[in-house]
Length: 287
Image (tube, rainbow, N blue to C red; front, top):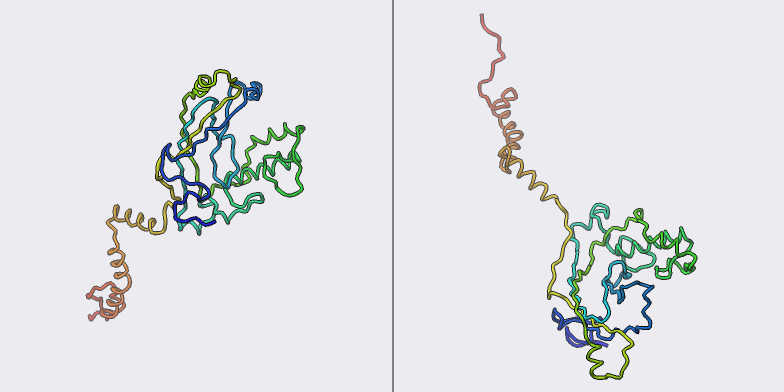
């Protein structure tokens, strides 16, 4: 279905039009049954884990924030975009220290990102070491063994492995999200008890409001530190600073080494190429 207008509310994915809490996404129906909470599972810390990530990446739950129970949580998001200048296209990936999407192929993902590369590399190492991969890893091929409880210790050791030989450089164009959270108590149960005194409360509830902090955000661009023009500018500036060298001096040197010598030879001869008219005679002295 085609939408009419640029800012139609039927667009997918849904977009916000204003920054702040009024233009954000409000989720007020996260319920947890109290009978389902196991203190031995996560100890005294209970709630939901939320991870913000790029749409083409797998969520990394090691970089998440917690939504506690019976709380109102406000999540302010500030995007951070890194792009690359056109001058870096001709450089090798190791020189510019990043990969374009078409420069690195991944078997489990359509697009390259550093996070996807690390996940696939860790899956390859786990398959090689444990002869299986966990269910949450991307499948490397059709015939793959899923790790069971007997391989949990091997998988746990591989999780903290530093996969340096993978050479997972950052993406030349990447988007990340900086998160700022604030929370307060939500006394919804007191209101419910006052309105329905005979109803037994057997669940916990929380409210989450996600929004962009600002209407615009600044971007960073990867550029070459010293290009060809910058190099000659710096060299010329140093020459001018120390020996008074300038562009006019270059033409003067070329003039005295080429045109001036040729003119002197034609005018005074080969023996006076420097331009001295007092030429020493080669005739013998008369006694």
